[in-house]
Image 1: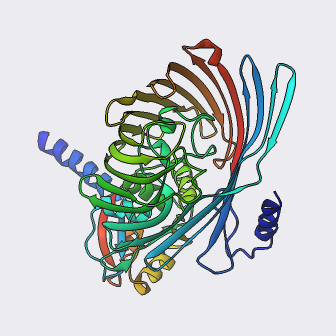
Image 2 (image 1 turned 180 degrees about the horizontal axis):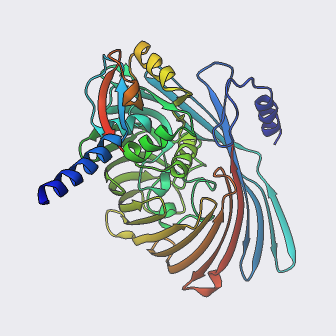
Amino acid sequence: MRYISLVFIFLLSLDANEEYQLGKGVQVGSLPFYVGGYFSLDYKHTDDIDRYRVDDVAILGYGDYDRFSYLVELEFKEAYVETHQNGVKNTTHNDKLYTERLYLDYNFNENYMLRAGKYNSPIGFWNLLPINVLRETTSNPVSTNILFPKFTTGLNSSYISYGEGELKVDVMLQHNNDISYEYNNYKMNEHYGFGVSYEKNDYTVKLNGGYFHNLSESVVEDNLYYMLLSGKYESDKYQILAEIGSQKSKSDFTTEYAGYIQGLYRFSEQHLGIIRVESYDDRVTAIDDDMLIFGYTYRPLYPIAIKSEYQFHSQSEQNQFLFSFSVLF
Amino acid sequence: MKTAIIIFLSTIMLSTLSSADEYVVISNPKMKDLSTTQIKAIFLKKITVIDSINAVPVNLGAMDPIREKFENKIVEMNFERLKSYWTKEHYIGKRPPVSMQSEESVKTFIKNVEGAIGYINAKNLDNSVKVLYRWSE
């Protein structure tokens, strides 16, 4: 945690050129370098366990110069976890700093961009904005955790074309070990994936597919293939988001299907209501579950989120209440 | 009598049309022609390079009524949605366009910076800048 203190002291010492706004970071002098970050605290209650957690504490640094831009994100994951189960209290600390993202972009022109480094795999919609303060519920849909690698360390080539709408094609290539491989849902040394999305007016559809070579011991299969179909409708008042996909090995499905559909309604700028229905059949863990999730989010300012949600599971012992407080600065 | 009514109604319609304000999206004269989809993408920083030049979108101040009209018409997002958009973009390392307090400042900036693009009321237009798109409200 001493690193965090040092970073905060550094941030306070910055001479910002423009008025600071929460959620926008701060420029370091007049350099092409902006610093920001985020943190989240959460609470989970099930029939058996109460858990209090300092989940994410992260620092962001980014900037651009001419056609180059870069981003680095360092994070303490689960910095403090306290659980109470059957009257027994247990606490864990983690002061290891992970490299969550580290990449350099080069924009060739209005159509082509090349990225090198560790980045959020551009798969679906949820995985692009995975941090607590930016997503609409404290929990992540299960499908975003089990189907594909959340992070890729390698190259990402993007092509965007603007006609009546916006067509985007992504190609992901990894043929090396991860940077900070502990900080990924799969340990892997190969990932080849593609994404095609089309956005017009308030609608976007996206298709992803790919292969990765799995090194995680918890999953027996080495060679895994995934496919994900996503759709989004967004207006000033509503958002509807849906993703469904599957994962298979060479011989059989490892996850036959996993998906969700989520509706969001903005009662006002500050108050949001969310309903999500999820379903999955994961043969690796031999769990299949259906969930109905009701959430309410209060944002006194957009970069501050106070969220609560209740999850009803088909396996009722999994029913749970979640509460979180998160800030982007 | 019928002719008189038609002339009367036409006069009302014409006067209504002529009272609508006209606005223009303008750029440095060296900028190529752009579609509204491309203009939107530049203001959302999805396009950062155009024709080998760095694109530099310029907004008017946050409370300027022309900015609100531009964001509703071209960017197709209201002020609150754009606030959430730029907070999300901060996470992926992108900054919102710079803002200027007057149409005159926007015009001067665009005249002097290759790749600059902004919007003003058409009545303030002169031939130092290029018109990319016109609309009236």
